[in-house]
Image 1 (cartoon, one colour):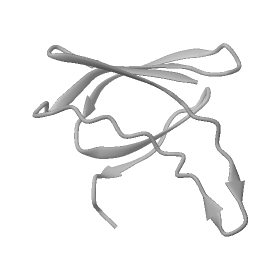
Image 2 (image 1 turned 90 degrees about the vertical axis):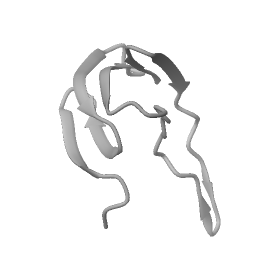
Image 3 (image 1 turned 120 degrees about the vertical axis):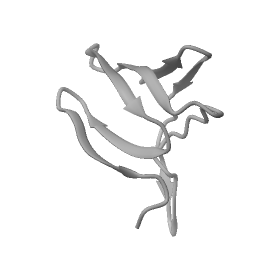
Length: 82
């Protein structure tokens, strides 16, 4: 999976690492995109392993967003909220 996050002042990209786990350990599946002082994200582009491509626009910075393949945003919340 490839993900690109863009706004007027920056563009950041990431490839989803292969998630593996072992006895008594697990990798964190979340990706973090630092957007410096930006208050919003213009576009999040996702290229899923299935070939599906999705765009989410006008997201607020400083939040956790869960995006499901073909489902859009399935959960969101303020960064650091518990």
